[in-house]
Length: 94
Image (cartoon, rainbow, N blue to C red; front, side, top):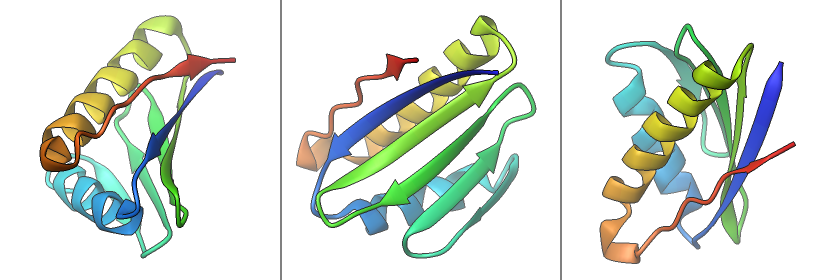
């Protein structure tokens, strides 16, 4: 598996975690609580963790194309949902 991580600085991480997982759940398997979430896109997964300082996004996929898709979908949605807070998602691959 190939992995990458993004640490999105925000004091509203739990709110964004919930919003993202609820949105993803309309099309894919997703589960969450206030501090941890998970979405399975079929071609890759993302684990979301809310801390007091940031939303941590951990993407995983069997290949580069799948990881690219996870990073794009999760990053794009996080950026759009967090436009008022100027959220920035920068992925770092292992």
